[in-house]
Each structure stands twice: as C-alpha cells, then as structure tokens.
Image (cartoon, rainbow, N blue to C red; front, top):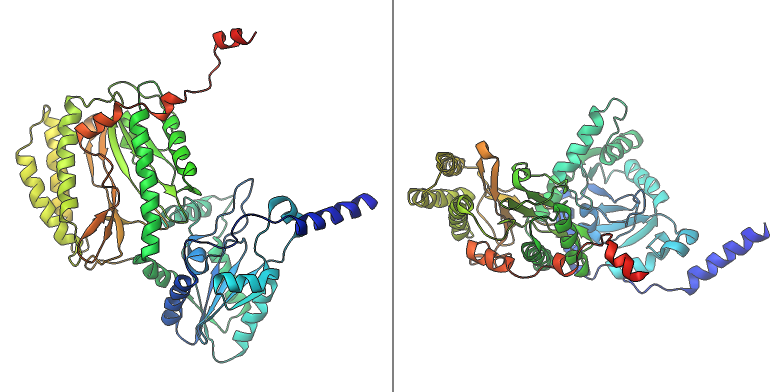
Length: 491
C-alpha cells in the first residue's frame, strides 16, 4: 500500500511540475475561420436542429493520435473521444471531452480534457465545454423540449489518417461481409443509439452539408495543400535522383517519408504507390517489394499529410535514367496530350467544355505521332477516343478533388469556381505489354485562371533525364548491410 501511495504521489507531482513545450491548439487556422465553418452548418441545419460530430477514438497500439477530418475541420481540437454539438437555435458550440487521467498524462503528456474548459474556450472560440458524460443529459433536454426536433450527424464514415471516404466505406463493407465480424461503423452505432435513446428526435445526414462546405478551399487551406504539394514534389525530385537498377521500391518509399517528416509532415496522405515495371499496371499497387530492373519504367505517386491536408502528385521515369525508344514514343505522346488538358483549365467553364477542347487538340497530336508497334498506336488511339467519349458526358469530371483527403469530398458538376482544388490523372494503357503511364498534378482555380501547384516538378523527357544524373539521397546514405571487410577492420 505504501508503494502504491508513493507512486500516485510521484505521478501527481510529475504531472503538475513538468510543462510541455507544445501548442495545445492548432496554429494553422484562426479562431475566426473555425467559427465561419460552424456558421455554415448553423445556417444549413436551421433553428430547430442540432448537429453532433463524433471525434476519433484513441488509437490501438503505439500510434500517434490523429483527429478525424470532419471533427478537426469544425473546431481544431485534437483530443480523443470528443464530441462536438452545434446548436442551430442559438448558434452556440459545445465540445464534450473525457475527464483528465493524470496517471496517463504523466507518461504520455498533456491533452485537452473537460477540466480545461476555460483554456479551450480561449484557444478555440468554442462557447461551452462539458464532460463526455453530460452529452446524454443535454440531448435528453432537447428531446423533452419543443424547440429542437432534428439531430444531424454524419452518416458517411469519418476520414482519419491516410483515409479517404472510398476506402473507409470499403472497410465497413468488408467487415459486414465477414461472417465472424459484421461490426457496424462508429457512425452507424452512434445513429442507432441516438434513435434508441431519443425516439422523438428525427436523425438526418450531416455529411452532404459538411462536404459542400469543404468543397471551396480558403486561402489558409490552399497554403497547407501547397505545402503538402511542395513536399510531394521534393520527394519526387529525390526519387528521380535516387532511382537506379538494383534498389527496391520500398527504399524510395523510405526516402520520401524522410523528406516529409524532415519538413514537418504528420504522416502520409495515402500509402506510397511506387511501382516498377508491370506492377504499375495495378494503379493502387503498394507492396513495395520489387527490385528495380534496368530498362523498366517506374511510377511514383505519393504525398504527405501536412496539417490535415494532403496532395496527389504522380510522375513516371525510366529506372536507368534514360528513356528508351518505346518509352519516348508512348510517354512523349502522353505528355503532349496531358499538357493539352492542363492548358485549357480555367474558371467559369465546365469540365465538359475543357475536356472537349483538350480532346480536339489530342486528335491533332495523335495525327502527328508515330509508333514503332501497332499495339502502341492502338493504345494511343484508344486513349484519345476514350477521353473524347468522356467529354460528351455533361457530368464529366477532370479528375478528383484534393484537400483534407486525397480523394476529397464535395459534389459539383457546374462551372469551375475559385477555391476549387483538384488533380487530373488520365491514364494510357497498353494491355498487351501491361504498360501503364500516368501523370498527376494538383490545380487550384483562381479568379482569373489557375495555379498548378506542382508546376516546378519536371515532366518533360530531357528535364527528367537531367535530374536523374544527379546524386540521390539513397546513394549518399547507402543501406546498412553486413560487410565482412568492415567487421575485420573493427578487430
């Protein structure tokens, strides 16, 4: 008993005497920007509704906590097991947090808890702070009254680190198909519990409202996407320099991660798609186990998570640093077509118009191109024809949105508007030889035109070959392998 008492006393003294030299709240966005995001939600749900957003749980294993995109977007609080309630009747926000655990904080560091109410309100602009066990009580009051009759909450799965909605939805479906699993999503459980506890309240989907709010990016959001893009491009530069026959795909993955973390990234936006040779035929191949062979073509698609925002950049290059004949033919044709799309992108027109203009130019490029194999010519014709057919669809899209998720949320098939951020990634395929060529860049629509955030990254053949002549990180710092002669020198 004495030992136990001394241990507790030590933890308490340790907790209160040691301060952390870290910010407790994000410095990337102002209180005013978070407030403006919540204001959009208030306006959308109306005065007779409240919205509940569930934060991320504490991670399993020795993994750093990362808040969900949806929760962070509305308040910036990075504490596990948090809930945010937005009251449309008075436009006030309440955050619900677990109680502090001094014994855990003594070893892991301080996180914001319900005991930090005044500090949280000052840092975040949140109106009220309560303990998590009060959420049930507060919702009960709404159900007993007449002013609130609707609860909005996201029906779509939350996005976490390196997580888009597409893969989050797939994970839920996979669990449902497993006869020995069958777990419901956290969102599904929350919805079910709300309906069980408060049957008088109608439950509606907040996801479409949140998605539309995230569609148009603010200046600060674009700054973070720009930073993530720059880091992705720097990693691709280093990838070009470091690529030589004999290394493995996973070595380039490690090199890219070094660039990201060295420059302040908090993780990966998605797993690295680094594929040599026929591995590139599978667009989301991510095993990283292949040794690079002389004469192969490499696809490199990777970006970091920087301050909850990411990018999506892709380049192709030859493993040996020199484009051979077939690579020059197909890649050269592809790049010319790709640039025709980039050149046409502008605000206040639809994606369909841009695609139709680009398709017309692609036909001219095709007519002037020559190929050494009939299958290459066939692939080029099918590439142009496919793009042309896609451009006939009035709901055609140039690519996908990019933001907090690599496949970001939001739906819009109208004209391109300032603040929209997206990538383009048309793919050229030669099925007979499993050749797959794809570039990808991130574009921001401005008031007068566009900004290609990745425009400093080479895509032309001569520029790539020039960069690949330079020494790379992997050559400067070779693998730590057992060497007999080195061991002998130590004796």
